Length: 239
Image (cartoon, rainbow, N blue to C red; front, side, top):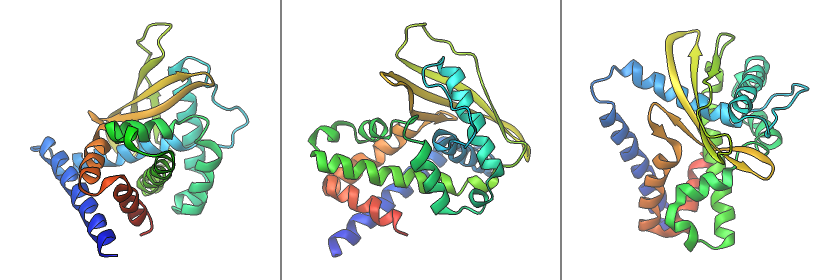
């Protein structure tokens, strides 16, 4: 028990240092700007994971920019119309994620890249546990932003700049919020798989999701091992 408490506290301290580093990177910017960036990072995660119940599903074999725009449009539809999502009903959010996220987002690759070199050291069981824990961490992270989305929120995907036969691309977009006149740039990194395009990383205002968590994971694993990281994530998710 004492080991788990130390593990959890170290993870929380690492998380705090990560946020401090981000504040230093944004030094000189107004506090409201930082809050805006944080909101759109959470919104990006929700767009990455949410799918709606519309009849037409996004075509993962279409052009990657067309695919991302379709995912975003349908995501916003359910976020703007589902009252349980607006209430931050975690059960409802998890239900939507379970039903619609897996075909379009490669959580396993996101986790593998976030773990970096330590992924190769992990056993198959540890990899499965880490992926599940990290997925829940991301779900908890974006769920708090869902109530902030309103009828004026929209995302416009920029024309793709990539070779026609590219297998790994970055799709750029601008997100607008009716309650805020600023627009925020959000980039999605996708890989072409045998079943179509899959999103595995996002970038909000030059903060890549995988790189941010890789720093945290590395410090935690160095201190307490892979099992320590899994335990810390699960403990954090349980609160």
